[in-house]
Length: 426
Image (cartoon, rainbow, N blue to C red; front, top):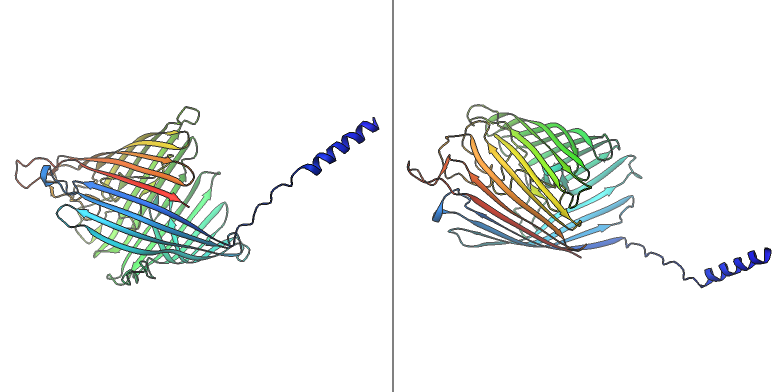
């Protein structure tokens, strides 16, 4: 018995002596570089809500090279930088093509981690700030940012947009006079669910001391589970365009994903409302977003979508928006979503300039109904380096929009848009 045990031990030692040593992972270099090549294109047809031959179209193409630099990751002091070159071409009906080239200095910040400042993540420089669904901001801010806490996580930021030059080829892209102070506080209800509040303050001394404060309450869970939701209840205060601001807004919805069913189908239902008035008087009860929002989010698919519709793309101001959609995901590599929107004004009034992607050339103000829209959004992850996103969208205007001033003028035609983004990572 002892002999058998000894022989077994010798065989085991011999096998171990012949085995190749496990490969040792090479340490990550202190400074890493990542390059992305991005191509984006978008076309908007009938941007003036006209009809027939009077349609006004515009198309934009935007090839981009983006370089990211990260240094001393996971060290007490680290840094991150982002530089991108863009060649943008714009074409519009009746106008010659306009080509601009920019070398954008997007981000450059120093980070000091918790080993230096207990329970605090501090950044100094130019950093990217985005909130859930990009409902408040999707912009690069020059200043200071701090995040602290765990179950009750708080983020504080202070700075300006483009205090330093943004486009290194154009010295005019610096010196914005608007100061920002932001506060986001979130309490962890569980691993996916956060509730909290926010305050977003802007002050511009160069424009008659304009000031705007957006604040409110928020509940959010990302679409990574069978049931997710979002809820924003907000108000705006301040003074802008020689009016006191007194607006309110609500945006909420749910996404249900059937994880055990083939293609993992998902359903979306949402409602958003922004208060409004007739735009006259010393007090404006029209809700205003910050002007820095992106209004983009995921439904659970592989591509972002415009939460209020891609063709009309309205600001949440003097409007009711009802949203419903459905989507599927194929093998974690391809997703498809179909989303519908219905728009109705809160207070019958003309559309505020630049509050939507479309212009109302002839608006007879006969109904609060603005129209309806349909978006089809697709995302394709070809592999870990290549991905493709695309959307096609339509907006059908209501009977209040016409082609001309005459009583017998036909109604305005439908508007449409498409968007494409291809990205390669190296």
